Length: 206
Image (cartoon, rainbow, N blue to C red):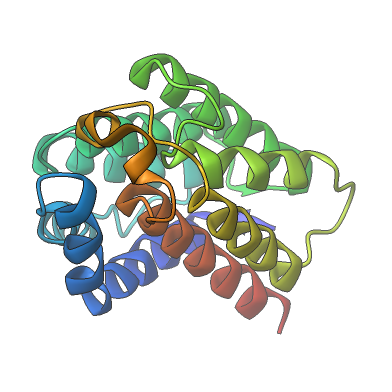
């Protein structure tokens, strides 16, 4: 089950993952972008942690609040995209205090579809969507249980494939076929978010 406490832990652990890997994210972004993805993501997720609703039992409210922080604090394209993702996921969960696998996968589908609409992007264009879409499809294929290890592995497999894509969106698109063989910073940060979620779900099983 995914609860408000799960949502808070997800945001906190995501922030920790981003902080520990901010230099790598910025280095990846230096290759195909502005070079500030790590710092922007760190600032955004630190703000999300600082503003977490610690009292509500509403998992959706926690995610919507985090999304608002990300939207206002992360610079560049990532702020609106990640902000949209968490806000729409929270809206989908509604005001329930517990979400099962099907409800969580529905929230991910709503979040990813709105992220794609906001970014005018589809799978295969070397963006965060190339990690989040396969993960969402995996979740939609599950029934009553969701194996955290399989979830993280699905994200890792998707991330590995991104390297061979040609960038079609944002500043990275200027590099055209020279972007092939290089990792996308947004896809990498998306992986860290899914890895954090997998850890939270695993702890919930114990």
